[in-house]
Structures are given as structure tokens and as C-alpha cells.
Length: 287
Image (cartoon, rainbow, N blue to C red; front, side, top):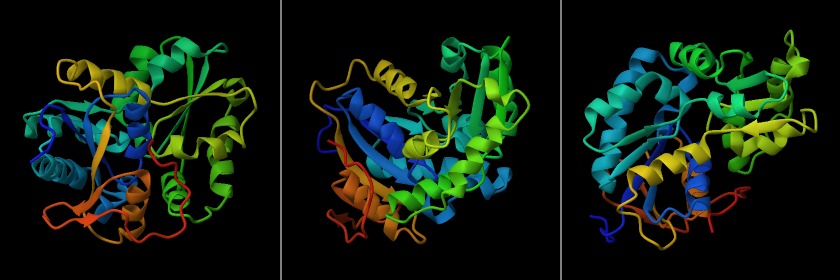
């Protein structure tokens, strides 16, 4: 059971470590809640998996995470999972579920040229959900889409202390700017929660005046609204870093370095107490 039941418990779910960018936003907003992160390390990356498999797997994994953390609210911090399986998760759980969607609406209000770049995983850029968002919030604007290959994996490598191939960042930006009309892009939507973790590397390949937008702040506001009557006045507290197994040593090390006090596997009650043995890391610990 949660040791601080006067505070709400929030579970942030992602296929890998992209949820850390959302947790940064929750920390910046000083949400008085206990926060756990669940990474489906045994099945990462989602962008290469069949839709039918994910629609079955995601609700089951999230439900197991809720049971283990006694979560009062779940954040699906994965654009692929949100655009595909969000409603399935909501039907499965009895607690509120906040999804992550491409930040088309704020980008449309910020652009000066009327041309927006949408950087996402190859599947997210083609989802009907994404089409509907663009039709609703991007009407009258030009939306140039690019499905970046390997960018989420590059973010995971960097967090684990490795040096990703710099060509991945160059290709991601060129994939937008080289398209017809791409020279007019003045704002890029980072439509994968992994991407804000490597925004500096992406920005190094883009024009210096480029603006960037992601969903982190909007998720924090929505979470605060749903938990408004329960939030503590104290700072957020990082509680558990959960994984589903597989080759997750580096993931668990990053979660430890980020500030999670316990490292657990879903369905396993025995947990490692941080600090966890780790390689050299480049990750900003939560403060």
C-alpha cells in the first residue's frame, strides 16, 4: 500500500523511458503526488509492433502497474499507445486515464508562418487519431509530417550513457525541412515523449529560430485538474520505477539515477532499493 495515502498516487506509463519527460513536467508543476514510472522494457519499441498486439498488451500491463502501485490516476505517456489503445485502457481501469496526443493545438496558436512540422514515430504520423487532431486544430495551417526512424531508440541510448549515431538527429530534421514547403516551418511538434529528451540534439540540426512544443505541460495541467482536491502542498515524490523485464538493466539504472527510491518488476513483490548498479549516465536527476 502507498505509505502516504493522503497524497494521490500517479502512474506514468511508457514503452520505454519517454515518460521521464512527462515526469519532468509534473515536477516542474510541483504536483503534490507520489509518482511511479512503468516502462514496458520487455516489448520496447512499440513502433515496430503490430497494432492488434499492442491493443491487447497495453491495457493488461497498465492494469498490472495500477494494482502494484495503487495508482489513483494513470498517464499513458506514449503517443503510440495513446493514439491506438487509450480507450481500451480507460475501459479496463476504474481510475482516470490521461493520454498523450500530438500538441497540434498549441502549435497552431504559436506559429507565425502557418507551417508546422510534426515529428513522430512512423506509425503515429499515419494514425486516424492524428488525422482528426490535425483536422480539428490545424485547420488553415500547413502540417508537414515526418515519421522518424530510430529516434526514440537514440534517446534511450543517450540516457544509458551511450553515444547515438548523430545521423539519426540529422535525418529526423531533414525529413521535415526537405519536404515541399519545409523551409517555412517555424515550430516543430515533438509527438513522442522520448523526443524532448533529445531536443538539444535535434535543435542543433535545425534553424536557430525554430520553436519546439510537446505535451508535457498540458499533461501536468490536466493531471492537476483531475486531482485538484487531493494534491498535497509538498513537492512531488518519486516512489517506484517499474519495468516488465527483458534487457532492462540500463533502464533500471536510469530510473535509479533519476531519483526513484525503489526499482521493481511488474508482478514481482521483491524490489531493489536504489542506488542500483549503473553504467555512466547522462540523465538529469529529478530535484
